[in-house]
Image (cartoon, rainbow, N blue to C red; front, top):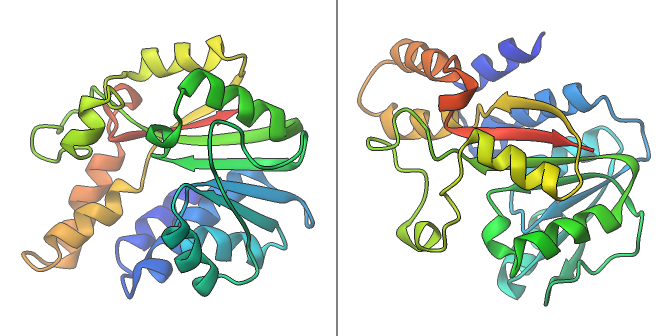
Length: 225
């Protein structure tokens, strides 16, 4: 099954959050093509399905959290994941530790974005990949489906377009290997609409949303090296 088929299947397989998102993370791993025994760091991530999809591929998973409560919740769901409390700017792992680092809307957790990106580079192995999922200021339907809360907006977190995010990452020294339209929006669309319309209608709308030009996508997925 190709990547597009997996993403489309996720609109129709809703059971719970983990099952629903699993095909999306599997599609990410298909893009990355990891080797058994490689390592993943998730930044402030409570996405159980990310850790489980990594576990299914024999990827060693670690996570960092700003909140002790969130860290404990993650530990209870995924005891096989190495978790550390993240205090200050420094990521609490040694240099050149991870093959993959994953960030999903977590840049607001960085006290200083420039310093935070340097920390990502420090703990990422040579030839490693940093997957950054970021909101797009130019999202075509932002007035109807807000990207995030007012607190994040007030920090300037959302005030970046595709071109601006490119400059952020290249200025930090990353090479952009690829950028994709973020298909996580399918999940939110499904949860909002599934009580109001038939599944086939939801799938059709979500397919159209997933086909938006990259400049106007809901979120942007950067694959960085």
